[in-house]
Image (cartoon, rainbow, N blue to C red; front, side):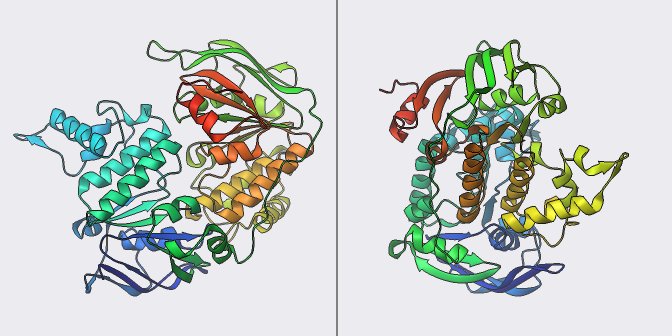
Length: 499
């Protein structure tokens, strides 16, 4: 046996993240680790990678007990980890991020040309194209994920931990990554894959271990399992399929006309964007990451001003207005990057829940803390947010539980217009079911929703109309009835789909 984790236990105060978890990995095996948010998957892997110290238990490599006191220990033992949330230096180039710690040298100096050449060679080998000279801060999320994966591959790890590696990848990139994983496994590399995407898990994994509430509920062969069985093992019940009900579409709530945003290069970031979102309607936007979706959301939400065009919310011109003014005009916003835009990691669960709700929970300028705790406590119960207490800092919540907190907070605004950007990124199947249900309920009540998601299945499932973006332009629109994954993928790639 290549790797054994025996009876691993880890608690944070009164919260037990891992309760005597045992896990085994064979050489050349892809072993998936699945479970609900807060089930203990990432904690277990952070222990393996030396980022956390277990309260009890043992780790063995090739039958020999080892101590992982830091990530450097893990790397020295041939273990690498690609984290769910990027750990990159935004001011460094792509190549500098990939080779950091093992930099090629020319004499006593860092050889940037050699680093760039190594990066190009690696990216071509694994089918993940990147520009080695570009600053990471200028790269879209999809490219940043590629950089994280290439960085671990460059380190030459024998055991590679992938924590939600496909969350920001396009369908084609996902296929290429899964193929690369299988090819590397066939060459003797071993993978531990943390993922909520059960279809991908079943496609690439040899073995699947399920965690629930910090304990192993079962280990099965992928070839002998299916999504229904894994879902039941994860959440302890059968899931309910959500469906869009018929509804009368109302008047426009959001109206964009001729929106333009200049970029630093010849091509505009946004080019003549025109569309509307009406009452009782979910409009989905599909596109490969980096084709203007992020900039469009920033313009709509007030994070940046357009160079041209109009943005009207409930008939009021809001283009270039401050964020608070646009939110006051009737907008709520589930952001695409929960850590950059959605929360303060050093603030508590209650404080993060309060954001955007301060006006309704104060009297004479003093916050009504009892009401705030009751409000956020109700969200915690209703959305199944796993936290030790409302005083827990946001940084101690799992990514999925933090996502549920943000979704609950923004839905509770009960505004006429809602931006839902990657609303289920990093959440488990049970939480996805709930969030989809809440978005459809808001639609049923007459809310106007702009949905931006890298998951085509999510866009197809929830949207009444689907717009496709490519290079800052709207290149196609499909009704829910006419849309298929093939048609959308064709438009995303620059082709023309028959409506």
